[in-house]
Image (cartoon, rainbow, N blue to C red; front, side, top):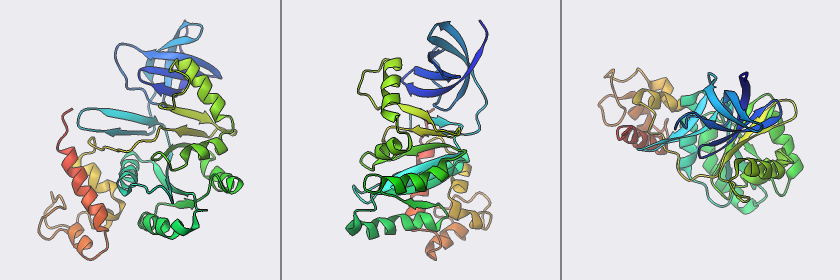
Length: 296
């Protein structure tokens, strides 16, 4: 049989769904490999009418993943933009936002923040205050209210998605699903179809999935998660993934400075002068500690 080329549009465990020119095929990898991500372009061989085996993965432009001490979890491949959804309520974790931004810098993906539920006016000033440090670093913040102002939300987000392959991430409760449903009107039907095809049971939303928009753009929706481990980033990658460190790198007394407690460190001086937020420098120290714990 001839080899086919498709895009992975859903993943659940070791089960994948590929879109081959509009035809959906259930796929497995050869052996026990699980190194396939949603968004991957794959070369397949059909094994039956609706099933195929993944022979190889085409070269990726980007790969976003998170990792802990023991394993890594691929989030998406070939994406150009990441949207972190936060809201006025419930409260969001700065740690998760900062880690996602660091992951984007390391992977070469453009990061945006969406502040949802702006109709909750009494909580809006505090939420704006909390996203301000990220805006100050140059990350665009877009304010929307998916439930109260759906048309305005679509008008704000659609131009940002055009021509891009984007992933939406966020903790549960931030309104990410409402947003996806506005942008992809038949998302619910697609989820049911994917669930049936992956045979994961009817009510699961624990898989990552890719939707196509008219005009060729793609949106990847990932399940809500509370942790974003970055154990795979090395020291060198970490210092470059904090955008605000860049002006000071190379200005330290010691060429192998870790920017933690060394004398005459340009980064630590910038923290002391308030040019780098202490919260971000503390996260850098935490991530450095994590990367030294890696077992794999």
